[in-house]
Image (tube, rainbow, N blue to C red):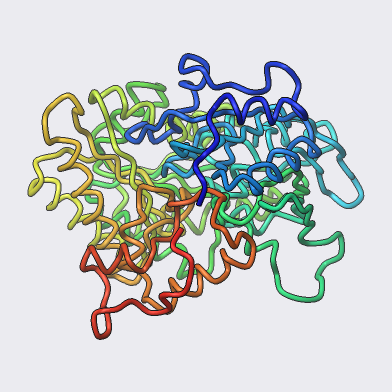
Length: 488
């Protein structure tokens, strides 16, 4: 492979298509792009470009393809797995200027938007029409819809309404070679492979998203939440399993442990019960009759499961206050320690109590405090490990603890991510979760879209060689399977 062009050469070449001010290469200009929400990993970009339209995205990708320059696409930078971490000798392609809501179709209940549009902005634009966009990550005020598609983001209401992939109609993207592809269609189904589902959650490895058409839902007539306090976190975990076993699918079913609850209360003042070891927030939405029935059934289950207190939201303001604490849990916990490390793993609901108990045991083993916040209804855990990066060796100990939590998730039949993606954070644990032939298939899919491996290299899917070197994968006769596949 020929030497990477210099920053000046890349800037000069791209200036043929991009407007002045759209190409950045000076350290003080590119430093804001060196990390995403997972600030533990940093890399100064080589060159940053900020195209304003799809034609400019095509031009950037075609040039980088011809010059063999890696490209990392970036949305709002709120990701929590290092998925948008820049490449040391690559181009960081920011979609932050793609901020237009192109069309809202009331009859079809869809919105066609550019990838830089904020998640919450879609619901704000649709609100006067009585519609909204259901997936609501905690970062919805800032995260972009393109990033949501790349990570297949969830949110507190994904239990009932699904992840990003369940709320998409079409995705338009540009391949590394500069070809435009449109996946999905306006019909209920389309012929052939479901490539839209494939690109959703692909973490920028297959294409650069330039347009997204999402489903909109009618606003429910009523929404009400019930807050339940428990003196034992295993009882709360059992309550979650019992609600789902009863055939109830709440609009939201979230849990915080005692430390997270107390941190959120100090930050938001939602009037949470401070003596509780666990708090559940259960929400129902629909017609007033449906909500009343579901709330009564959930209250009975919660009390039978050992809840020491239950509170119903009396109005919309109180319902939003219940959720405000949960959605602000991450910054609230950030006030407890100089640093914290957020984990994202998913487990079967029936194992919730046992897994949390083991997480606390490991907290003592590693000498690090942990707060737990999670989408309890679908078993999506978010342990927040508190540490101080200024103390020698503490970050490394934190990483080791986080890795053990993810391996525990796999051990009980779960997965290493539910919505944050793999990025660089969890790439080693991919060697635990998947067998060599499965990883080889992932690489074959990557090669079909990007044969040279230039889009977001080194993320999401580890090489078989990497897994073998780590000793985390069974290797037959001292060689990895499919050695002819590209090593990205």
